Image (tube, rainbow, N blue to C red; front, side, top):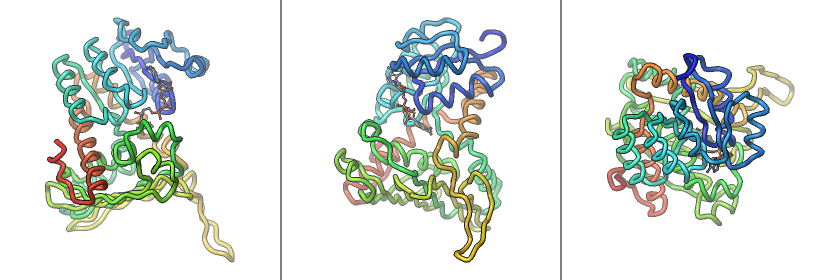
Length: 339
Ligand SMILES: NC(=O)c1ccc[n+]([C@@H]2O[C@H](COP(=O)([O-])OP(=O)(O)OC[C@H]3O[C@@H](n4cnc5c(N)ncnc54)[C@H](O)[C@@H]3O)[C@@H](O)[C@H]2O)c1
């Protein structure tokens, strides 16, 4: 803590790292970016040109040695999360880590044990919990407005596939993309997922087949409380980022639609026209990235538990691994088979 601000180091300033740096530097009272790290000098230079950050390193370990850094935000590629978390925990830094924590639940279990042993906090970047639309659904389900929840429906489609290198390192559609929906499912239904049955296919781009992945998936979920759910994913929706949710229960239903840049409606001889949904996660979820980082900073400042913890990180990966197994073996898979 310096000048009344929690001092934060951001590790990796690519797509998502830049969003977090900007929020921490400009929009979150009580926090300051003390240092950034990236292996790409151009990324560091771009960040420094935009924000006045005191220190920048190519080796993130140098940030961990800074005694006045209270916490780190890990935005490096997924395969580097585990070593960075372990090193940050050993250095006594609180941690915000992007999803997924890791692709192996054994490693996440080791991470969670280390975090506890070192007495620091680990928050996982399931940002959608902080989206105003989904917060509203959560609040309505939680307050009993739809009665007992029976069915959850999530539609989650990207506007276009990521590059091949990203796909190769991503852990596959269920651990990279559907993982957000698995977390959302647990969060909205207030119940753990016990079993999944997933079908997946390559319908968008043969590159997914080349790297042993899928681009289209339907996952059926069974929850501990008896409710059922479906998640429908595609890596390519030609009309933009399609993010919709519906919870149906004994007393009603609550649903949220896509966000658009504006809500105009234009009618002509051909029909009714409106703006397409916001194009991708940077625009669609901007408020949620701000909300999650505020929550992290407040938890550290006020010494209270983070709202999305290492167990949430582990559960989402366990469901993802169960879904991948289910799609591969074409059978329902209990999450307990994975754990
Ligand atoms: N929550 C979300 O909505 C969301 C969105 C995108 C990505 N992510 C997650 O964030 C992570 C990063 O994804 P991205 O899309 O920003 O990737 P990216 O490739 O755009 O950025 C990663 C950055 O890390 C840097 N890097 C690599 N090795 C490093 C090292 N040893 N030390 C410091 N920096 C290093 C890279 O140079 C790059 O700039 C992934 O785990 C991904 O799953 C989450």
